[in-house]
Amino acid sequence: MVVDQLRETELDRLFQALADSTRRDIVRRVTAGEYSVSGLASLYAMSFAAVQKHVAVLERASLVSKKKRGREQIVRGDHGGLQRARRLLDEYEQIWRQRAARMAGILAEG
Amino acid sequence: MVVDQLRETELDRLFQALADSTRRDIVRRVTAGEYSVSGLASLYAMSFAAVQKHVAVLERASLVSKKKRGREQIVRGDHGGLQRARRLLDEYEQIWRQRAARMAGILAEG
DNA sequence: CTGATCTACAACCATTTGGTTGCACGATAA
DNA sequence: TTATCGTGCAACCAAATGGTTGTAGATCAG
Image 1 (cartoon, protein in one colour):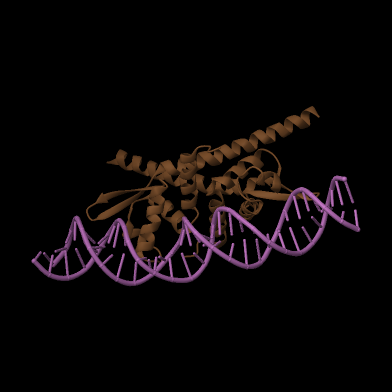
Image 2 (spheres, helix red, strand yellow):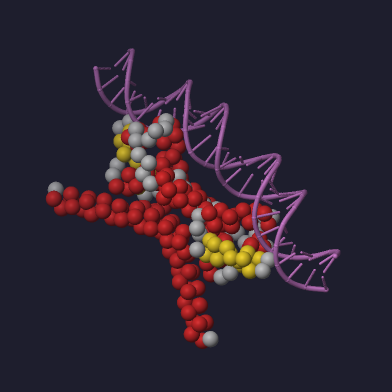
C-alpha cells in the first residue's frame, strides 16, 4: 500500500530517537537552555564520541538543531520534531475517542 | 543519578515500540477495532511469526493487550501506553513554553 | 478420532544500534 | 607558531532488532 513512505521513515527516526533515556535527557536539557556538544558530553558517563552520535541521531530526527559559535557547536531544541510526534499520538487519541463514541452509540441503540 | 529507572526503561520500550511503521499500523487498527493475531498477520507481507513478535513488543510496551477467545487471541488497543507517551511529550512542550516565557520576560526587562 | 487452524516459542541469520578508540582538522589561547 | 580545545568521522565490537523456518500445544470442524 505504501501509505506515505517519507512520513513513515520520518516517524521511525523520531520515535527511535526518543527511545533512549540519554537522548531524552539531552532533549529535555537543550529545550530548556543551550549547551555545546562537549558541554553535554561532560554530563554523562560515556565518551564524547558517544554523546556526539546521540546528538546526530536527534538532529536527523529534527528534535535538535546545531549552530556554530566559534569553535563550539551550540545544540538547541527543535520544536518541529516534538510537534510531529505529538500530532501522531493525538491522531491515535482521536481514533480511540471515535471508537468510544461508536460503542456508546451502539449501546444507546441496543 | 538513576533518575527513575523503572519509568525510564518503560519509556524506552514505549518509544521503541512506536518506532516501526508496521507496529504503528497495528496500533491504529486495534485501537479502532478488534483483530486476532492471525487476522493482523494476514494484512502484512511477512510471516505470522514476525507479526506475532510485533504484537508481543506492543504488549510489553502496554500499547496493546490480548484476550483469549476460543483458540484465538483478540488484540485490543491499550490506552495506558499512549497516554504515558503523550504525557512525556506534553512535559517537553511545557518546558519549551517556560523557556519561551523566560525569554519574553528577559526581553521585556532589557 | 483426525485433520486443520491459531498461537507461542526456539534457533538461526543479517543488519542496526550503542558503545569504544584513534585520527584529522578548524578555531583559540599562549 | 605552537599547543590545546571542540568537533566530526572511521573502524571496530558486543548486543539488540527484525526477519526467517520449524516445532509443538490447544482448540475447533468433520
